[in-house]
Image (cartoon, rainbow over the protein chains, first blue to last red):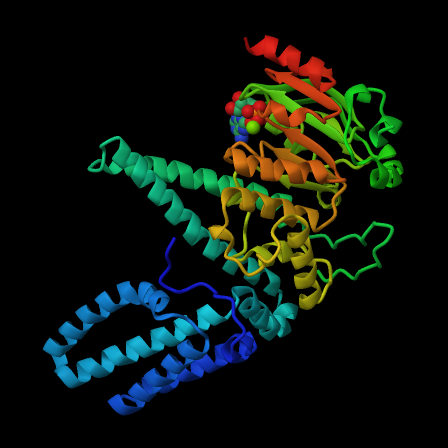
Length: 220
Length: 256
Ligand SMILES: Nc1ncnc2c1ncn2[C@@H]1O[C@H](COP(=O)(O)OP(=O)(O)O)[C@@H](O)[C@H]1O
Ligand SMILES: [Mg+2]
């Protein structure tokens, strides 16, 4: 499975250790600055900053390249188009800006556990609990999104292989029908697994019943 | 004497090396009971289970039977994922239909497909997800998750992307995410069906070491050696209910 945004890479660099919430705010601030300055020099400085980030976080060039491959192709196309429309200098700025902003976002996802980001957002949103928002559901939503991307690409890949094995690569239905059926089955199974894990059981948790554990407080 | 024979007269063939520690907990199981009382189930017109009466007190019970014989439906009733359309089920005296939440906190469930059971990006987060309602701090959740992973053969995998684990490791993770809540009963619906031999062994070793009660639905008959009781289903009814040797002989006759 490959994803345009890199998944967390364990490490203990300063970037890894910065709390997720601050890092997220930092990323937003950085992206804003990048958008506001449209001179090549500050952009290049931003790029250098991101590069330093990658180096200190010990994320190898191979991995970065694999992640950015698709993006680079896209950027090349954008660059050509912009050159033709608005000239080489503006095209450089636009593409540099995109490259720097997306690299920064990648650096963020590579050094931040999704769970930590979610808890930070949950904490940030906790004042809204009184308004009926259930921040803990957000965590599940993010987790399931990541899971769904992986699951769907696996299903698509396996379906494509089966299609090839039967020499039916030109048939749309030979892909679409099994893909749909398997996706629905996956959704079914996922729903069951979530129910078994108590998602949707809304009443408060009863106190722990085991003899040795201290009583715990339930929080929702 | 084996721990299980204390509360069970069917366990003549039960064996296993885990007498000492388990004897201590045997009293806990003695009072525990899974009961099926005249249970039936229909999907529309289609009757998939009928007239099921079972009192399960054993630590190791298996449901076997051909595809479509109703094993999964029966197993899912134990934690209220499927409700009987006839009769009732009781788990420790609780009705999964009315007390679903309390029953599910006592009954863990492991499904066949490991890919469908993992809901968080990393192994540690997935286990910690189970603890979300325990009122623990994030640190405590992480520590407990890491301890559970270590205990069940996934030491050091807390930060590992869950989707990149092997099939067997994913199934161990699913198991871990259930066991971290210390359930009384673990129901497993064909947990080894999608695994290769090596991963199968890995999982089976873990299942055998559990002190929990295990209700296992399986086609891997060789897993059942140390089981105390095997229930054979055919077309929605119980056709044999015995120690593994006799039950499986019956089952083999049935399929040939
Ligand atoms: N959701 C459903 N809707 C309709 N029929 C179902 C459903 N689930 C299972 N069945 C049918 O019930 C019967 C028993 O299924 P199941 O309990 O899954 O059997 P087993 O696990 O022994 O293979 C099968 O004939 C199956 O087709
Ligand atoms: Mg089944």
